[in-house]
Image (cartoon, rainbow over all chains, first blue to last red; front, side, top):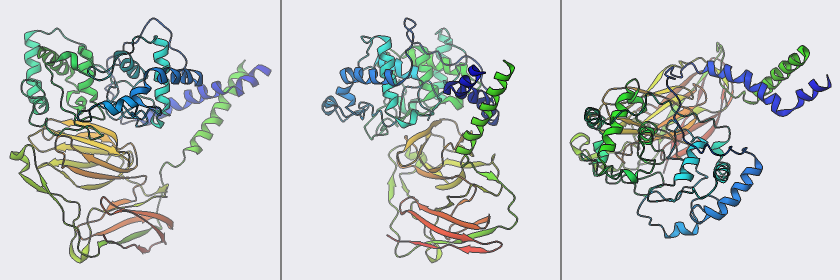
Length: 277
Length: 242
């Protein structure tokens, strides 16, 4: 009995129990949620070498210390993207260092408008952003996780958020001439060329005047430079960008238009990759 | 051991009850048989500001070279269109169609309707009737945080998107920077938009005292106290000026 009383009052237990009861109930209430939950979740590669540290006050405090050694110069003392180095970055071009208090993230595995997964932040910290932010593979995976937790603590929007990765339907298909041709047709039909240009040079008729949410000029990606893709250049990275869009920028989500025809998205990925020189 | 599980269940149930009361602000449908209404007109007193002429910089063949903004639409007797009127503090009342699609159209490189009203949880039916690429970019709140940014590459395909947050949703199109629209998302179905002549009616309101918000995209927000009595129409007029 003593044990059971103790059990009753242990907070985690109570929460777990509440979750068990609440989750199925709300899941059922979400009647509108499409039943298109097919295929695995977006495959997010994170370091398999170390165990992920717990997300608690201690990790956040440690993350802050790492942040103040490695990130503060661009992202600023309060994470507002206003570090001393930011002053020297050209204001003629987006992106500027992310303001972590805004809760706006381009590089997500989640649907447009949703918060990113922890793994998304981990990936960006690890890889960096080509042309803009260095990768921090020099930090241990454990330290990178702690930085991720600290960054999350800077925005209210992460509180209570339960981001869920979009479903990946199918997987990359061999880049054959047939596939590339099909991808070309999708590129035409879905009007990718209106921004990215007929030859993928980022010079489409809508390219001028595109801006990000902070009003910095943000031209569409020149697709012939595969290595410059900010959200990654692997097939799955490009698929993610097409489906999720880049919140904070102009690139919208195309998920609704590929629904049921996801194979065409993989053809488009092959076409886009084929543009690279 | 069995007892242990029993105790756990009870505690979970208790906690659940606490949780649900904490978030009890959710709108509840009840029978409103003795309701009253709020009715009136929103006007603009004086000469309304001129709507700017917008220069199309892209897709001129579809959009036309110039477009006239629809920020101020003033009709007879100074009636001001496109003003949202919403009861803010009501958590129980008339039924509404949760599945109703709120139309939101991209046509001739303008959004229509320019301002619409919806209830939180309802869905927008977003569609493009133009042969060029649009993207419909919804932002919530004053911070303009992206709610959705969706591509509309094909004509006449309706995309349904749930309005997840209440308040003003600002809609833009990154591809055509002059395009601008709003959806006023209420926490209850007691929300509407003023008609061409500035008039509006909110019906089947349970008797009581309410805070009513009157919102115009350029002229700002006004809050009014309104008391509704059974079977009667409570008058609510407001004149904006600049």
